[in-house]
Amino acid sequence: MTSTPARTVLFCASALVAGIAIGGWIATEYLTRFYADFLADGTELRYRHDASARLAVLASLRAGRPDAAALQLEQALDADVLSLDALVDGSHHRDETLGVMRRVAEYRAHGEHVPEARLEGRVQAALARAMAASAASR
Image (cartoon, rainbow, N blue to C red):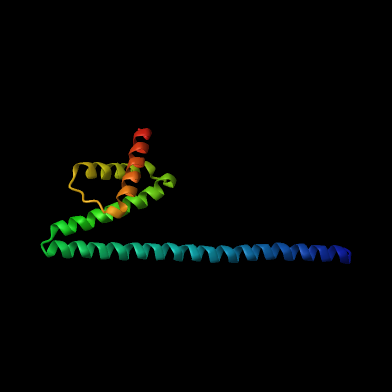
């Protein structure tokens, strides 16, 4: 038989290990659910935005206003460029993302793009960074 102090130490150590295990499990469950909800909310927001934007473009096209539809698409494209610029450095698909941004820069250089004044400087800077990074990775 073990002595009472040894039993006390063994009991306390067992309780500590059990508490750590149970606490870790609870924290993991909570964080997993929180992260899943966070991703679902972000995905839902993106699809709601995309659906609203597509409805606006379709309404412009159906109303015989192709210039308004093109402007809406170009403004959405500018917003996409800024989003991609924020994500490209940590992306697992960096080359593909830079390729898309390079094609946007080429479109803007040769197209009838009408820039939005508030975003133009930031979009141009993002595209310049993408072109430089794309050229460096070739």
